[in-house]
Length: 547
Image (tube, rainbow, N blue to C red; front, side, top):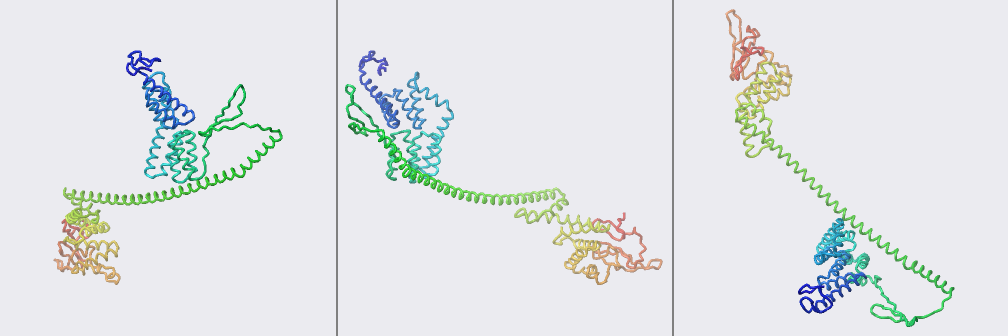
């Protein structure tokens, strides 16, 4: 010990040898601190941890440099599961006394065991979380966390107390009593634990059986003789009991032993065994009830989760459908823009072909207006292209190609706005007629009769109903009869030889047809019998182009 004024080592005198100051009060304070340290040490030895912690804290209030008291306080904290508080005390002790200090050993033991440090940190976090759950009235989660804390740190008295308190709230007193017994083994005189046990005893009417009687026998011996009295402590009272002597024979001793065994067996059989059985049955029933409750809760949660999953699956399906529709619509818009670019660049033919592949129902607002504008703009070009290809194939007697192209030409002019629409229908009907497709031919001829009633007489003879009646109107006509509005009735003329020739040229709707109704035409195959008004090409009676 050193002087607080000049730091001079002190001796037995009450005055400092260095500065002459009166240090009696300082010595008295140190003695009180040491006294309290010794008292705390005695309490710690009998596992009165709470009392030991109280005494050691008072000792440190008198002398904060009492490293022995501080180290012992850290050990008490560590024994009750509060490792963080213990480590704090040891670190302070090490700073006060850097050399020859047991705190170095304690700190090294904790720091060298990384797993234990991690476990302590986890238990502290879980204990704090369980306290938060208690404040939020989430008792189930708090109980789960506290069980994990006790399994990792079985010396944390606060965890036992809090878990027992939760069980007491649920009126599960036997579980709470079991936990508090374990807490008593760690801290034998903890007032909180004892208060909880007293509450359990009041609620259940059963004693816990933890009262311990510390008896001390004192014998007065004077000159090697027994005084004849027995003294012991019962609580705070001194009991003085005189000793008695009684003779006992071997037979009596044997009988007493047998009677004791029988009495003990009877007590075990009639009292202890039924109580244990009842306790086991109650515990099993309680476990079954808890298991059923947990199972029901889990099943309800599983059903709720399955409903959520089904809802999310429906939402995903709807989202995928919306996405597919949006992608399809976007592709249609891109195709429409491509058609517009082709039309602007002057490639009307390609634009018209691609426009036929689009559906106007896929567009709305401005896109629909653009689609309608492009349809009107390219329909004439598309009609002309297919009409020219169809009539050319028709003349070459390729009726299949003629039907395909002329059908596209008619489809390109749904409103019949083109001047050659009638001719396209007529060629198409004749192509079907020569292909033997009477159903499609009749459909086209009926459209001509409906839309162009003034020209109905041209196609009425080709309807399948007329053919069935034996009225064959094609016997006196060429394969090109019925083209346009031209007829096959020519005006007879007499040549120089005196023969009559009706192979005159007739023109109607811009189509020139040469016909010999008598069959006496003297023209050769090289003579022109038809001129295409679109291309200007001339064809002979066999459909060959005349150069």
